[in-house]
Image 1 (cartoon, rainbow, N blue to C red):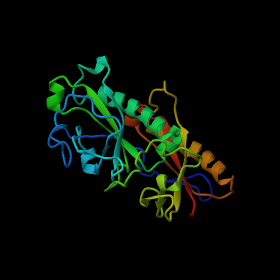
Image 2 (image 1 turned 120 degrees about the vertical axis):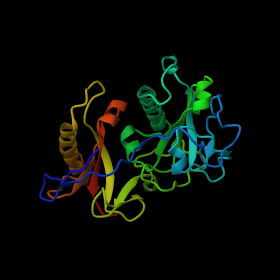
Image 3 (image 1 turned 135 degrees about the vertical axis):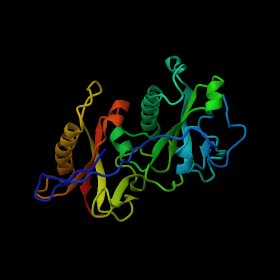
Image 4 (image 1 turned 30 degrees about the vertical axis):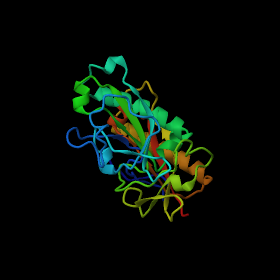
Length: 275
């Protein structure tokens, strides 16, 4: 993903924002398994508990494995486990940090995430919640553990802290439109420099829709093609959302080959609009 400014209407400037729906596939392999760890979860080989809640932080999510203690879901928490299971047999011999493992987790957790929230992919990509996935520790992996865990978390890649989730986040985005407090807006001059805020707060930009820039079977067409498609499709989409004004500002967030290879074929479109 990279930034670019284009003018296609008298005042329609295409501004590239930051990644909203982040594939929070933790990147550090060694070290502690998160904050406030539970000794019974450290190096566990058993499949984790479905529906468990935790007080996760962005630092916890930046780890490959997590053993943070669970809390009662009626208590304050920032994460909830919405899918668990055993990796498919074809991945049992994969390297611990293999790309194929990450791609499989992306597809699996993404599909389950939308179902859990009760929303389509376009709504999910514009939400203020995202997901993280964890695998066993390297020690447990070496002992044969092959489970995975998908958690919804109350924030995204740019979050310095997470917001509390309701007792269960299941169905959180059900309804048209979803509650503004769970949708992403920006307060600032541009999408990429403004502060990301909930849409029930003062804002100047709103993520209003997404557009599809390729099909599931397409090879990656290159950055230039994806940017041009994003610019043109978002121009049309945002214009329709605003009621076809003669003069409007819009933006787009496009995603590069890494996200494409993982299965993402969508771009986020933004409208310049005051609350």
